[in-house]
Figure 1 (cartoon, protein in one colour):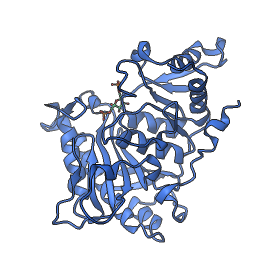
Figure 2 (figure 1 turned 180 degrees about the horizontal axis):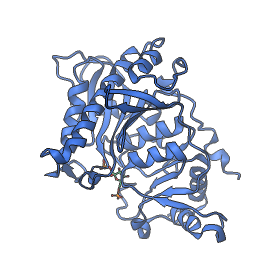
Figure 3 (figure 1 turned 120 degrees about the horizontal axis):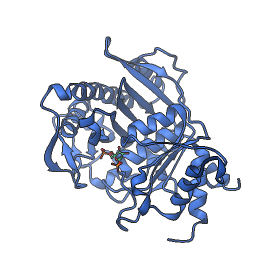
Figure 4 (figure 1 turned 30 degrees about the horizontal axis):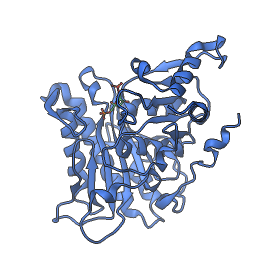
Length: 361
Ligand SMILES: O=P(O)(O)OC[C@H]1O[C@](O)(COP(=O)(O)O)[C@@H](O)[C@@H]1O
């Protein structure tokens, strides 16, 4: 299919600061701390390893808070909205606080940005100002908390562009290709941590007995083909033509143009969807729709789409807005939204081709 060229030249070669020396081969059963030390033993980014260790600890503490939710008074919403006008769950704010508390004191970070904070959080002056910027969604899919469905935390690490002076919002507005690390924690039947630093993707499972994240899923890769898509079909009336064409063809099954039966999934937790795709392939869509012409999508570029795109591309998949690679989008604002199509490479390329072929909206 000709459109292979559309994305082929965007293959996931490590770009930007992540293109350092490749670490040794991790083996099953390695703890995250050992893996982390190994990963950064040779590179000048040892403090990145320290920061990822702190983020991993924060995710363990958030995992415990989420698991204890119904046993504590942490369930329900706060009655306040975040900058996106979304109701904030109590656990959204608790998770936000925990991520800050476990990462601000180590001297690796200079400032943070989060879905739950309108403005950036500068590291208090009593702590050493580090070289990294941490961007995160403390509790993704939090609308699922009350119904005990998997939720997660998503994080992205950038380098601060200058070492002098105060960190400003603009310092965060770097395209996804500038990420030096990204990952997520999934709080599901097991708690897992999935991380990339530009040398592939590795998955760790929390051993509740030792409190260690243990390597259980080394070198995760996404199969280029899939017969499973994930989209919130209740928005179908608002989708653009290329997405309507793609989903209709999938739903037409063996008698349709694809000549294959497709399955659908929708957990309403991006972390759970992307994790499923890393394990068994698939394509995840939260596309642009016409409910609000000023809104290019629902999901947020800086702390949902960019970190997940880095992971998906490092696992051999692809991530696009339909019109351009997500990690090439130049951010204009901390909380900007973006259209998201990511997962198995051949399906993403097909969707990009459909956008190219579609008459201009
Ligand atoms: O409720 P919808 O429209 O199905 O959207 C679900 C999507 O929104 C999200 O819940 C947004 O995340 P937050 O919970 O962090 O706001 C994604 O995890 C998920 O993919």
